[in-house]
Image (tube, rainbow, N blue to C red; front, top):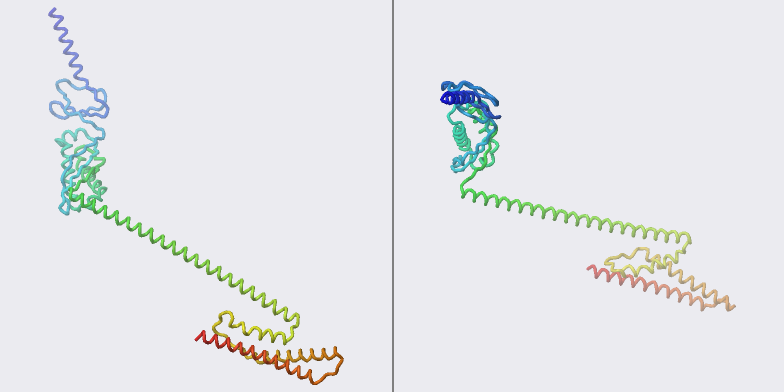
Length: 341
């Protein structure tokens, strides 16, 4: 019985010793092995064998890309304002041995390096530049951290500023400034819209005036062409019918009183008025003589001194009518001059 118990104990010890020699490393993990307290090897993912009681696992590291978010840290700007800045760090372990033996706590070291670098960068910028230079700060942080953490076996892939929180009073002032800027832009847009509206309205008025002027011009041109055609037709009719000079002279005198009848303020009596009166007077005398001769021919009596008196009477009447026309024309002229005066 004792022999059986001893055999079972030996078997258990052998199984434990064999089990302690096997190390199964998961994917994306690295195990640092020490032999008698000295670094020996880094186990890769899979099945690995070690010497029991001689080799031991010192550190187990994750080599996947890891996100580390730091706590808000106060930083003083160039214009002596305290702002709280949060950063997000994306890093990856590339050398497990260096990450375990080159630095005691790589996360704390990266955090402190980030804070000191931020203070150096932000200390040379004012608040406005700090808020608008995130890309520059991120690039500078990544450059400094990647250079410092390289010997620690860590690669910094990306650094981002998560938040920049200025003091409450500064936030209130910034909000007022932003509100004023928005009001200014709204006023500018309103003024530009009103200006564009006035310009369009002026352009419409201008186009309307141009079109009305063109329409009036075309109407006057057509009216002038119509009057020219009418005068041309009258002229052609007069010449085609060979009008007597006496008829033309009579029409000439007939039109004189109508010169001032249409509101004309100034008109001139032409120099041909005397000649026209003479022509009309002769026309009336000839007409009276012809009428008397025809009457004598119809009655069959020889001409007597009476018809001659009749002719002279007709001439005097025609002359009187002409003088009346001239007087009427003179009165119209005097009235027009009074109106002008």
